[in-house]
Length: 159
Image (cartoon, rainbow, N blue to C red):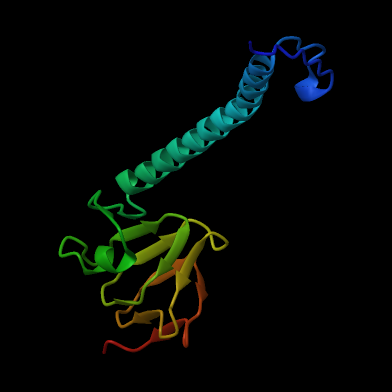
């Protein structure tokens, strides 16, 4: 009734012999193709999952520590402006800033020491305006690189 045709394929998918009817040959080709493609897809999914996990952990660590830290009070802040404007930040305090790009403008109206982690990695992006305005006396500021600012630091006398 049904014809049983024999198929021999030597080159398909690196197999030396596939002998059997057409149905077996098709099934073998499907499974072989799925195996290679499936393994590659699985590896890609695992690689992306690992990368995503590492990035999430890194971001969580930065957020947990706070990129801006008031050494005297022990408080962490998400921005330099928030650290300076805090009612707990008073004259004589030191504020440390972790590496990163800070797109903000702020006024230093207290006697403070602002320490960036490193000039090459702690960047203040003034977004086109005056990045830092200093109105208090005896402000110390170091370890920053100011970019995209009309005036990097504007100093006006408080007296």
